[in-house]
Amino acid sequence: MQQEDPSRKHGLVVVDPIVQQQPPPNPPGRRMFLHIGPHKSATTTIQCALHQYAPMLRNKDSMVYLGKFDPAFCGGSSSGEKQDERIRKIDQCVRDNEECWGPLIEEWKQHGKEGMDMILSKESLSDWTSNDHSDASYRSFFWSRMATALHGWNVTVLVTYRRYFEWLPSAYTQHLYHTQIQKNAPWPDAVLPTFAQFLEDVLENRRPPPYPYLDTMLQFKFPTNWNVRVLNLHNTNHAIVETLLCEVFQARNTCNSYQQIAPKRTSPSDALFYDRLNVQATLWGWLSGGRRFARMKATRRFVEQHLSNIDGPKVCPDRALLARFLERSLALEQQILVGHGGDHRIDQRHDFWNSTDRFCTPNASSVLLPESKRWKEFYDSL
Image: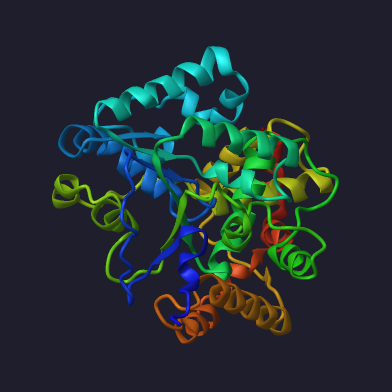
């Protein structure tokens, strides 16, 4: 008796650079691709590219792209097309069946009648696959509404694998940036946690990561007739967008015309560094209040214009903690990619130990104290 391929359970297919998986035959009905993340897995790169190529996808390959689009990251849109606010707020839209949700799914039906396939991209939909990041009752309601709306479509859920040791620091940085600086959170009564402190809490299960990781997403039970496809971000043969256009969407015309786009990125890591300086200065009484985002920008300008060297000691995880972190990353890779594309552990170990500086957090005190007079004058001027 032939043994069942575990990758086919629940429609799971993994795209990898070594073993090129062929997608299952398409059942009747137009195709709907739900790209749901997770966060910090090249979602902005994907969305910027798909938004820019949306007119060609529609006119040449009969595919409608609906997805999050952030001009601050993508550097504007050559097509002039603006983001559909209903997609940006689709979580809320599902609740409003009359004014938002009803008309939206009617448009989807019309696209299907016109012979169009569809792509919907929003990484925060990954939150609705996680017990730790969403409300259970609304999670069930949300996916039930989605399943009803997509009845008759050939649905593929697209998720992306990124190594855990690369993903977690990025998730930590973005979460602090969005919740503390970008939202102008009140000044804290203590310094922000270092990555070493955060990492220990996660590995000791004292707190979950700030966003769902791929392992928890794959445990979620989507409707049984939906396929789930895992894209390996570490595919060395093709960039992630090229893999999507050419292998997954099979959008031949757009694939042949595609040229890689470099999104315009801001750096949450840099922003956090300047904010850490300001938090420490506030705790010492050097800085009095103000809006955190504006203070961060002013501190950035001050450093760029007046200080040539702000390097100092950093707070880094000890080697034992790093070893545990690597083992967690290896175990998750084995769990997610087992049987698909061979064993990546040798490359992962090498990359991990050659990039441990990314796990370190700047020490604000060591930057501020050597030139305390200059810093105090700057803060007094704000």
